[in-house]
Length: 133
Length: 133
DNA sequence: TTGATGTTGACAATCATTATCAATAAGGGT
DNA sequence: ACCCTTATTGATAATGATTGTCAACATCAA
Image 1 (cartoon, rainbow over the protein chains, first blue to last red):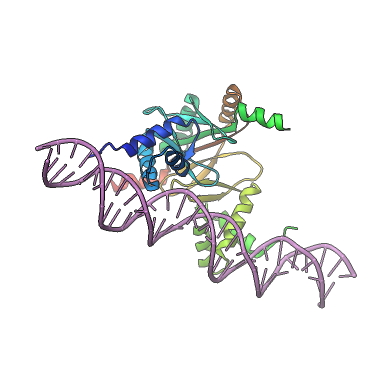
Image 2: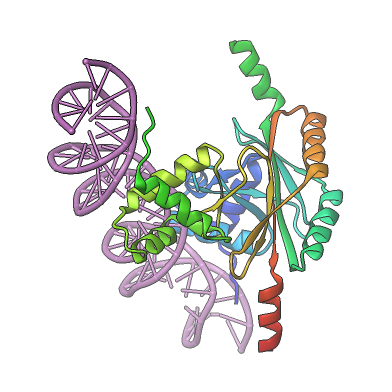
């Protein structure tokens, strides 16, 4: 049976405070700085559980690192992610869902799934970059 | 200046024979089995060059491995990939390009890019799975 | 409270990828 | 055809994220 531990709650809580995609290591640092003595392996396990249970979304950074972000459970959604600061927001993509399904069907592919993420530079980072130039 | 070596040609040729996304290690094995004594690091370098130069597409497997596939250069395109055998084909996504741009703009994000890939089970693998059941 | 067992955490192990660096070879100039 | 400069190679070490191990610990049903 699944048990509730303060460690898992701490990871969930810490992830909830981030509105950007963060790595397990980053989250571990945040937790340690917050005074908890949580172990790194535990953070990895908790995040993997959350992702598997649909309570967090994950994606791979360009460098191959796994990044996580809390998400509204149960709903299929995608993200608009800032390439500079990692900040992310959920976006709807109903049209794309349909498109993906029809493309798969047209080619005879079954059990379609898709990966759709939009990257860019968020307003704040754009402003910062402009100011610097 | 960039030089032409048989190693780079061998990697290009080997990648061209694959119609699935393959890892650097897999391609290295193929090349070694083909009798060439090419080094692993060289395969990594050649693939990175090809990806940077738009002569190959890359994506990360669920396990975080980098996978490569030869592609038609110069064109922006996406893939329909078999989750079972890795087989992939290029697909057009004009509507999605537009959608991505408008979504980014609507949220004030600049320099939009996107990752759009459709995964499924190809006809051959679907048939195989059905026959087994 | 207690006992069975899910969980934790320090650390070792794994594995893809990258850095190192001496030896090699491409190709422009002669 | 022959140097010579320097990009490239490849064996191997190094890196770094993630996972496995396992004894100690904590949760919760009874």
